[in-house]
Image (cartoon, rainbow, N blue to C red; front, side, top):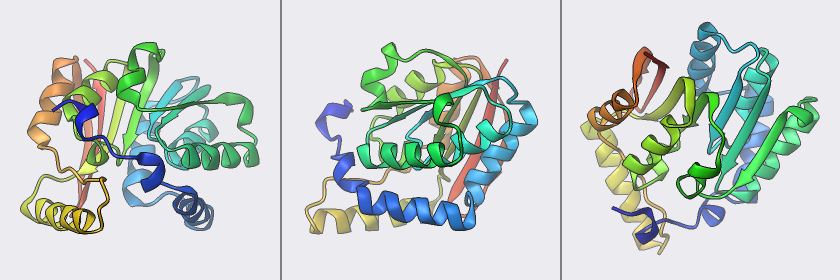
Length: 214
C-alpha cells in the first residue's frame, strides 16, 4: 500500500495544542513507561559519542535523555511542524540547542537524503503510518549500530481498539488511522537488514524493542 494513497495530515492530527500538552507532561512527569524503557535499553548498549536519528520524535524525550547521557548529536525528523517546534524549545531550554538538528516532512519521502546515524529510534511511529514496509526498511537502513522501536503489541485487543478508533475517526471525517502492524513482519524486515534483537518488553498495549547490528 503506497503511503501517498492514504497518508493523513499529520500537522492537523498532531497540532500545537497536542504538542503543548505533551511538552508540559514531559516536563512534569518525564518520559512515560515504554519510552523510558527504550531510553534505558539504549543507554545499556552505550550512547557515549553516538549520533541519533529520532524519527517522529514528538517533543524530544529520547533526544534529550540520550544527549544528557553523552550522545554527540541528534537529528529529529517529524511530519508535525508543531512537535518539531516543541522539541526545539525544550532542547534550547536544556542547553542542547547546538547539538540538535531538525527536518520537517515524511521520513519515507526524505530517507534517501538523511545521513545514517549510530542509533535510530521510532517511538510510537509505526502505529501512525500505513506503509510499514517502507517505513521500517527506510529507517533501519539508516541505522549503523542500534535500532529502537516502540509500537503496539499484535494482540486481539489492540486490533479491536484500533478498529474502534478508526471507526470514530471515520465518523468525524478525520483521515488519520491507527495501525497494528504484525510483529512477525516487523521482525522479518529488521532481520533482513542484518539486526538482531537485544531487548524486548511487551506490555498490554506497547512493546519496546532494541536491535543491534549483527
